[in-house]
Image 1 (cartoon, rainbow, N blue to C red):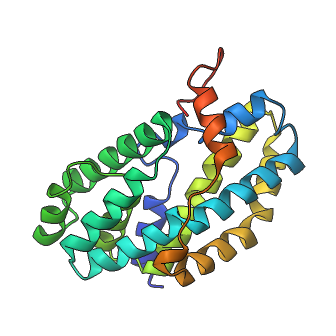
Image 2 (cartoon, rainbow, N blue to C red):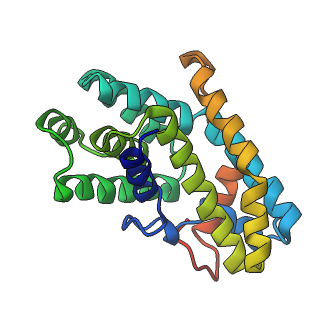
Length: 225
């Protein structure tokens, strides 16, 4: 991987990217509230299981979107975008991906890093989830597909770890230990995402969906999901 591509990936996957990722916990705050996540071990188990869910649906769709943007395939981008939005089964999960997708898509436009064909594909989407915007940004920045997939997975895991550090709470050293221990799980999720066929994709996670719905009325909360 060339130095320029690596630097662009680091920027794209950075928690300082102004898309609001730090305001969401993706159901984790509800799990902490209920006591399901209460220490480093339970946090590792939760995040590992969340990665398995992502590896079965969100990551494979990102992989397909990366290919579609590289080929400038408008129909494929629209199809996988619509599939992903339709699969967000709670109001919070849907609002989360649309808000971050919009913010990242606008950032791509404002930074003027995409060519006319990529900008046209973005403009063609009535709603834009995060995987679509991320795939477009990766293509615009010339980030290799496998690296982009790993970067997206790492950023999702890093955000979950930060939620645990702040809300369980875990210490900073414990948080870094947790993040380091999840590297192999991230790699496994990336490999699985690239191998699944279309008819093998699944976002079946009823427990997570219930936690998300319960979070909508949770009495005290910091995060938006």
